[in-house]
Length: 498
Ligand code: NAD
Image (cartoon, rainbow, N blue to C red):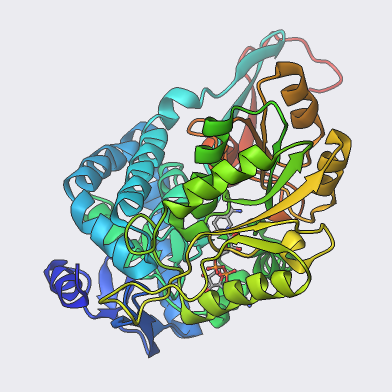
């Protein structure tokens, strides 16, 4: 699809336009703001101009959420989720359009963009199931005295999201937070702001009252303003570790609850008995899916013992993945340059480039930002490429003869999002899974992402805060517990706690 075609789609979306505006109190708003260009990484063209909101725009959004809160939060959970049943249906009906928007603004290929929207549908289904999941507790704790818990919404809450899943990550937070009774401010990535606006439009169509969801666009200044705003009670963040730390520190210093998910450096540990074909296809898919711009992507492979035959098969699979066909673009020129710099530096330091994705172009889309799949062997653990998040379709292979050394390499990483082991031996798989320091671990799977109702979240520098961001764990983040103790029986005993 061309930029012009996407702009035509955007003209047809009642609430979007070539200017990606804010969505406050149920309507589009230009705010008092300047704009910046949004580029399509597919071909480098300008897709839209996004509003850079001011503090006063944020104030408008927060006050609209605050006004909506009393009536929205007073509905029962069962009443609130009705909106999400209708929203789920609308996501299905609009899947082609949302897929095109995600593809054009993020650069991932159409099938990946579609999978992202399908995952959004699954997240919405989880929110619809919340009334079945939340059973408040009640117990007679002493004669005639009852204790009961209820989940109460937190109030006005915020969600700050990254570029790499412009539809899915907003849907990690919007359905659960809102179904649980909160009113919300979402700040999408300024690089990919259009999908979130489409989601807001569909939620309005599904019957969400004005003010319950507000989209505020902008860059770091508006994120800082969100962290500081006295009426925002909770902030969820997904993005790089550098910014996750800034946001976590700033939001919690203002005494808000905060969960901040950061970057990743995911290690796959491949044992000599691994099933060769299965390992090769899984590893290649994991390192290249969404052009390596997934926080669950395989980035480092630690091969234990004799592994040449497996490495060769991985290279064979990696060569089948071609830019513009089954491999999309990376997000920007800066991202492409950064990724290529990592590769060149590793080469200069003595690593061997087995598959080289540098200088990739797609005929007819020369302005796009592409990096081909890259496999680098004999990377040493002390190299920058072994330690830092590359966030591109690049696999660094390290060699070792000892399983404990492989585990140590994984443990030494500052991150701790995901890790997987490839083997046909169950006890070795358990040995590795118990010892790797990551929140999401797998066996014989390249992307060990938990699916609903299991929650998503890493460890170490991949997540700051206590709760995971999705699934059952998110219920604790988006609600506070009220504990009620009642005694209606006048004859009930009086005791020390009366
Ligand atoms: P980013 O940290 O640059 O930006 C994320 C958000 O923070 C954006 O909305 C941006 O406007 C805002 N922001 C940027 N700089 C800021 C600053 N100095 N102060 C306050 N706010 C700021 O991340 P990105 O490049 O959009 O996304 C890619 C990163 O996100 C990768 O590191 C990836 O691993 C990570 N990610 C992690 C997960 C996870 O679950 N752990 C999921 C998706 C993406």
